[in-house]
Amino acid sequence: MENKFLQLVFTSNLQLVKVVEKEILSFLTRETNISTDELLEFKLIVNELLINAVIHGNKGDSSKSVKVKVGIVDKKLSYIVVEDEGEGFDIGRVFKEYTPYDEKDEIEDLYEFGRGLMIVASLCEKVKQNQKGNKIVAVRRLKKEEDCYV
Image (cartoon, rainbow, N blue to C red; front, side, top):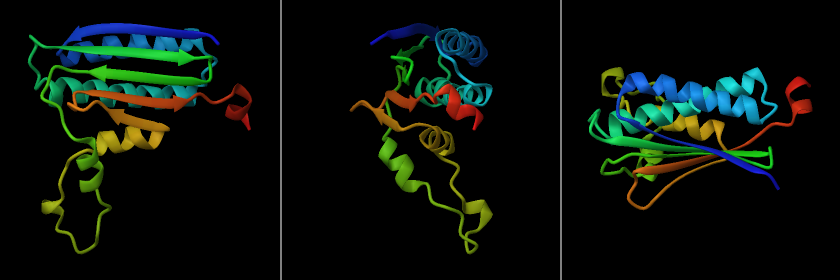
């Protein structure tokens, strides 16, 4: 079994999110036979998790940092771990409060909360967090190359 990983730490600055995202996508491209479509999905996952850590976790405080670890397990499974220095949140609450739009709802009353995490969850096999709620792990199975061109 071959495991590879990349670890990065950056200060809470939205401009650095793109730099870190590019480094992560380069790592995935270098270490796997990832398709362009799958790479775009990874970009969305990475972007959502990093932006959430900077904006919601660390509240944009540039004195705080975000730790990121991306791993590939036997070229079949990928994971990303993102940890911020914030107070944490309850991912179960995010998923519980997210409900589909109902025609009877007033648009002004719709709660804009957790959409990014819902997108991440839809693109991953598993999304979990630590007890404090400031560290999130997203796991995604890598598609086989032949699956990408069916």
